Image (tube, rainbow, N blue to C red; front, side, top):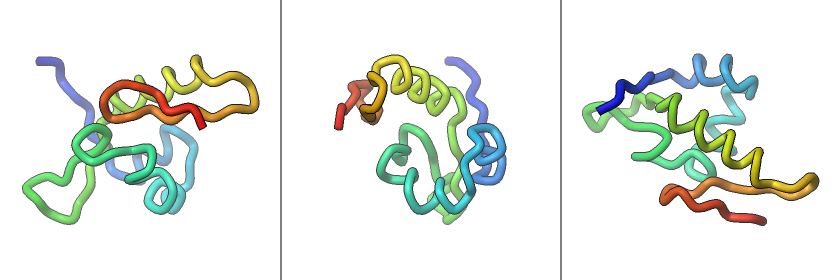
Length: 82
């Protein structure tokens, strides 16, 4: 099993250069999926993002999307072109 890096919303914001509010309101549960890109330790309110999964899916989305088109990585590893 590979080690995973867990990040708070503030730490993720710093790494991907998105505002914390954008992550919470626009990315979480639309692009970043619970159980894949983030977890809630011990069923609590705190959210920890899985850096390796997010980094992988950002790279996949950027290499598959033609200029001017968006691609959304799906939890099963597929990509939705929209």
